[in-house]
Image 1 (cartoon, protein in one colour):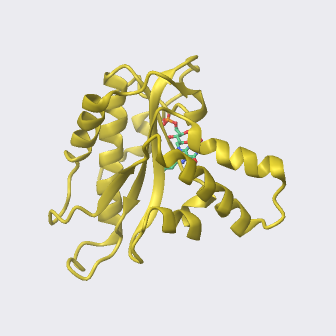
Image 2: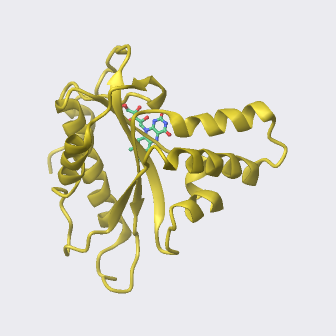
Length: 182
Ligand SMILES: Cc1cc2nc3c(=O)[nH]c(=O)nc-3n(C[C@H](O)[C@H](O)[C@H](O)COP(=O)(O)O)c2cc1C
């Protein structure tokens, strides 16, 4: 747990998790706490075949916010879809009519726990892993590609792969920085 740290998708190469390890990663997500047992989140695993469509969605997302984006900017946006051998989109359902008593904050905590379980397991499997979001999360293009319902929100991608070159670890906050006693 102490060794886990963010590795950005561009630093994650082959090999990635095999099919059994991917199943373990999603099984780890399912161990997250879930008030009311409402499963307020889901993941979409981006297959090799899906990468090209994701790249096009990233380009469209860029054009939504900057219709004058240059060819190089479009090419950089498209390239993001090719990074990291394992890529999945984490999608939250902050509201629904079936369980109005479970507020958005609790649903997002549940997704955060699912993501952390996956990050920790990826590290235990010997991989690097990271989360990546950005303005494309809000885009029409991404919402359409992943068929998000009106009450769903794309939160971030989780990327897993082999770390080519480890970076130095960051200084972590100490409990005195965030713990008080009542
Ligand atoms: C929901 C979420 C979205 C994130 N999106 C990005 C991102 O777009 N780009 C990025 O570099 N890091 C992103 N991160 C990762 C943080 O930058 C990273 O956790 C932070 O730098 C601390 O590093 P650590 O994970 O090694 O402790 C995201 C983290 C979370 C929780």
